[in-house]
Image (cartoon, rainbow, N blue to C red; front, top):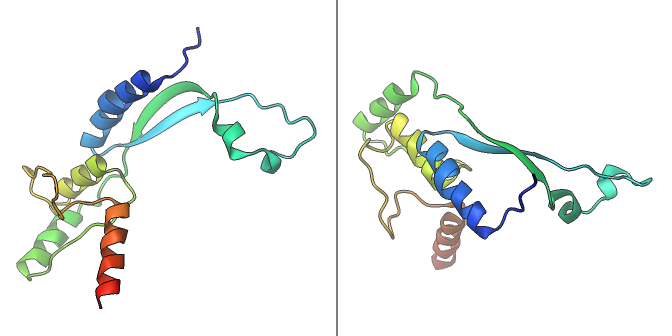
Length: 136
């Protein structure tokens, strides 16, 4: 049976599976497929929208890129030297925070609060950089 993924199902996947993986520092990967009829076309000629629409979801997997064992001690050394350690990543906020806690960049009991500048997504960071550059 094929199930059409609506907004409710998407929210459920995001809030239960993806969020659960992210809190464990796992990156989420959706595994899906679609049968494509090329009809004499090269795959590069097919619009992205056509390739990414109406996929069949097979699984959602969580993968981990483990920290090198020396990272937490290196972060502690930097902090003792008065260096503020920052992490820049393309991960979603929850995954980034989990990784930062394992690296001891954030404390293990850190909680994100609205308006905090401690953790921010790329869009917010870029806006702040543009604002800063325009001010000076």
